[in-house]
Length: 103
Image (spheres, rainbow, N blue to C red):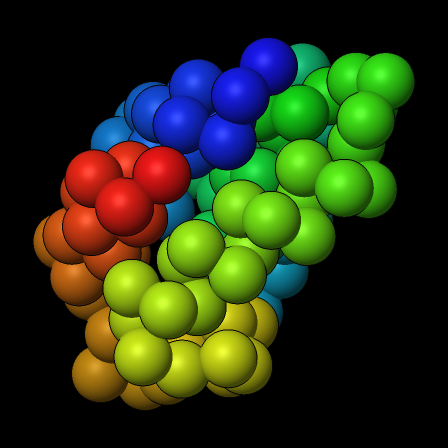
């Protein structure tokens, strides 16, 4: 999987549902692991985890995609950026769009 493919897949998870303060949540709002089949929403890094789904080059691809997202967000603390109280799902999707364009 290329960086662009990973980012596109992760963006798809965010488009389905976005969350803060946890990597992923079930429909009832309870936290779950990003790879849990019951997950219905993801944070920016949880979406990357779900997209990569433990592929062979998981660590390298996760790092590279995180850097692309951090550069697009102009903030290298992605978890804190995602969890900012004023952050919106639209802003997260826009950062994915920029990172995809840069990949």
